[in-house]
Image (cartoon, rainbow, N blue to C red; front, side):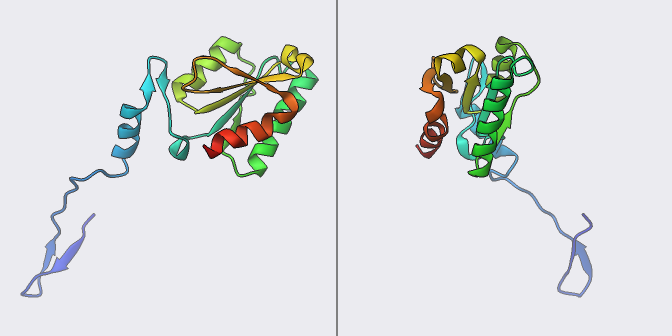
Length: 148
């Protein structure tokens, strides 16, 4: 960096520096070391790249799924939540595996079948199974989970 200082004689000298503490590059490594499982990373909410991922199943084939997914995404974003809408059109298994590997802590699944039943699925990355949540209550439910 060519950083210098003036020594006692007024001559420029190059700084000798080192870092032996836990810096910014060690923090993600330490978080991953403490928060992972066989499927991948489990980010703590505070440092997750996205806090919530909305996974619409068949968004390209269902206007209802697309509308519900975009609505939830927009509501969460307006509330200040770091949210990602997965609009890639992947199969559910591939989509879920990708987000588990990345480690996004909260996932909401929206499907045609679920909408017809009036239910969406919520799953925290640490949960063994998804929780069915009434479609009209999902925004409040997710906000409540983010507060804990």
